Length: 111
Image (tube, rainbow, N blue to C red; front, side):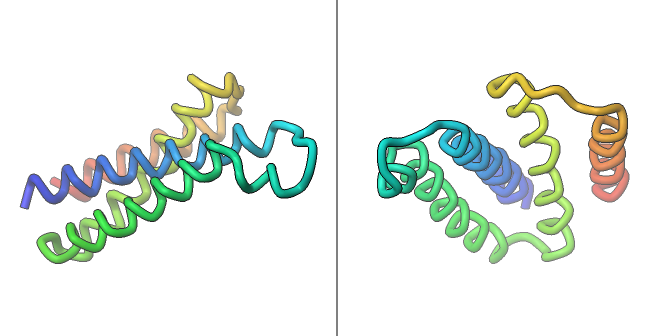
């Protein structure tokens, strides 16, 4: 079961990458409206999301549902870390405390 949990964890990370790509695309201006949706960031992000869907579907055949929902909450942590590293976003104390609570809750639940 551990390899499938790790697969779900990795899929959650790639889902966060997808979200950051969409945010990067939204922060740019384009010459026309079609280019807002047909650029490499948006196409890659939706391709990643589509792939993550199938990875999670496969992993759920081997993992109990109760673990999947808990692992998916890690996407909030990954999005925050990637936003800080790539987009140079700043976070409030409340957001950091909230993410630490998520991490603590996931680890306590998995014990």
